[in-house]
Image (cartoon, rainbow, N blue to C red; front, side, top):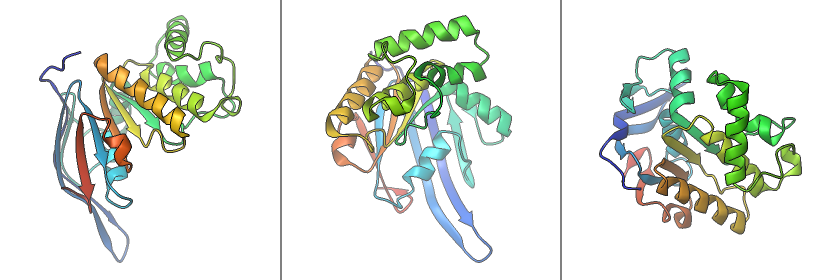
Length: 226
């Protein structure tokens, strides 16, 4: 699907500092990024480069010390915690390295969670969850708990959960980091297919082989884009 010229992510001169009583650490130092609708970008950098902090800011899980962040037309800088939470649930689907599934919940219950927070009716969310899980080849695993699934299957459940509210943006943080090579390839193929269908994908990784599968790479070193 061809991308249009709509800007989904606009970061302008983003700084992030962490302070203790004695020392201030400058983690991000003037980051400016634009991501258009339908792009697939990878943010790559070594440990300590600031990519996790940047991901947390893009994902509205943290706020910058200075700078402007506009997400899909909304200036996020002065939003309250509740407003950030609402925007995050509506606009962003998250896929984490550690899957972040509820251990005692079934596949189906894990996937419908975002739709519960969004106030979707039970019938609609059940129908949508089953549809997505079937598309991802998990129709026989609806009642399994995470401990009964392989790592690759757990990550597919996490992707299904990320798609539940039909967000424009998928934010994937080291999505292949805990997977064997074959499962990692499967997850990357799913992300590429979602991108082909029009989803905007931002992938955080330290692996060049993973980053090279994106359509644009942003390299981060010591809190700056290089």
